[in-house]
Length: 159
Image (cartoon, rainbow, N blue to C red; front, side):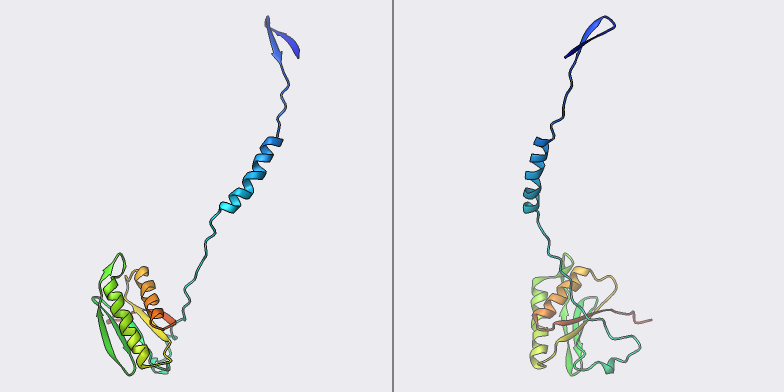
């Protein structure tokens, strides 16, 4: 310790040393604990096939050319050699209600049962359709056995 005289007052000065070892020990223990407690997210992607090119004719699409149209008050299932099936469109929080989803699944399953080997469906969504509704429709199609899903935007009648 050294004593210094400054403006008539005695002052003591001490030399302090910073101990880094305890801090490093804490960090060494915290890093593995934080890594072990981290939640790792599984990132999923929805597999889809692009719709046929605009210049190609619809007749060139092989099979049923099954289409699920999202219209104002109904979902309409159409295709070659398939009578149009309409299901009332009732939504809750941007997705079809449970009765609507069950009716759609039954209708799609009946089409796939009547035409075995059918795996493709196109979803034609009108402008303003919520993404959650489209994703739910894709899930319902997969549940009915239609694993090859394409998404298209419906054009307006006047265009």
